[in-house]
Length: 289
Image (cartoon, rainbow, N blue to C red; front, side, top):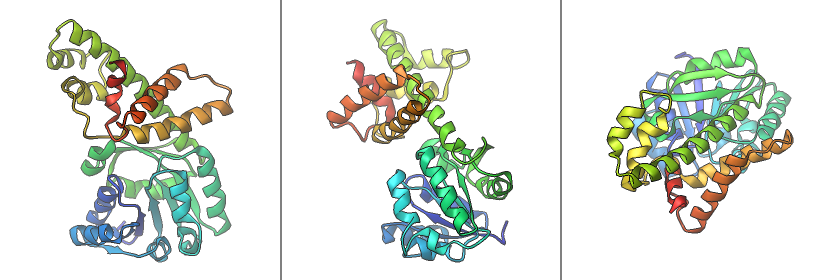
């Protein structure tokens, strides 16, 4: 593993610590970020190298990781004279940790094949805390051989890494993940409203229910803070709306109705309109008031 060289494109709240974990495992890592000052800060903190373009970061790397905002952000760092593709060589592996559409994953698969490289779509779950603590869950789509190579490196920042099938299946699994979260948060919001009205002590409610069938990560980590009206951390509902739009678009391809997902998305839209887009997704409880 120490012989492999990596590039990491995108140093947001997720990418910054993920790239740091790679470097801490003696994987020579070169980073790129639109804000060069953040790339320089990363180098000062973790060592490694930084480059001024995605192409320059990728040119000497064996495996290139990308973690940016949305489909268009991915395209902006992949294509063009200064994009990752211009620096790829036969045998390289491109890994996209961004949550995107499955359509983009298939597009990037084709683009990589044209230069003799391979592609793995690998969205993550676990949030900023998971990235910082090296406890992410990674959902992958691609071929087995490429997955076997990149999963060894992913162990630097992930506790669960799974290949779900061909390219696009990682992104589709992430869609399922986001739909589950949306439903759980809606249920917790309604449950909290009843618990508050009944005067139940919320910390004790959590301590009781987390051991039973209602237990979940969201309950253990968010119900008390929802009760306290604290929403200044975690995964912003702006990002969740982006993800739910991807879920609903994919559902249309299968002629599926997702009524709960549509309802939660509409509730988040109203919160966005009220200027709450940067609040944590657990702010969904505000839509009941």
